[in-house]
Image 1 (cartoon, rainbow, N blue to C red):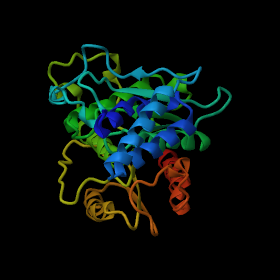
Image 2 (cartoon, rainbow, N blue to C red; image 1 turned 30 degrees about the horizontal axis):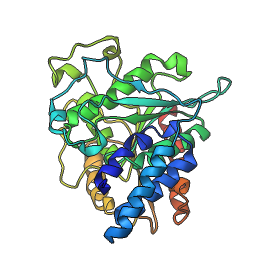
Image 3 (tube, helix red, strand yellow; image 1 turned 60 degrees about the vertical axis):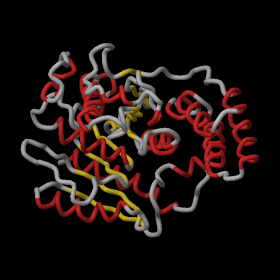
Length: 329
């Protein structure tokens, strides 16, 4: 008999490769997974596991499914070796995980406003469906080239330098290929949700200013991408501020303007109260938007059929206006 844990791990590639599968099937898979995990009756749970696995086995990729774009050259990925601790396939990654991204590009005749990188929360998994996949589509509709980042997740089990390096690597890729994407090099934003927001700050903490990958990983061999700046021009932190009391050494850090969106019923609001004051004390431009009655993790959930918090979807046009003000200045 397959356990619930084994069954849900089998679903990981389907969620992380969301652009490759029909959205309605991913949504159904998401609901089946949540129902399976919540079921306490052993007989009913076994039946749900069987239905879940049968649905997984029947899923097929779209005929025009996009390809992963890997961030690092094979054999030259900066690493602390922490991935060796992940031999039981925790964190939705296998021990040989290589960070990658998907492109969500506008038509050739469109004039993009800039680029937005989307990084889902948690340890990715089914958070990718709404926080990354749907949000990429949302920013396309707002006129941005969108990029879905599947990185080494913050502290699960990787270091801040590793997850930040993955974010910085994608930022460098976009700057290098700015002409291909029809964007200015200085209009690359990073949007992180929950744990993805922590990834965004680790990118800023370790790779803004003059800081380099080799400062933390001396065995890494720099290539042409390392000549490009690795921190974002704007940071969209969606219910993902660092924890209250978590200090950051601002010496040498070039912190970009940051946009916060968080619901009033979200525990992350307590962290934001502390972080906001900390940023202001260091002269960092920060814009905060809070939303009445909204709990954690509500970006893009209309894709999942959840229409309980339509007010939170206002964060999208507000973020658009924020970026345009930043770039205009």
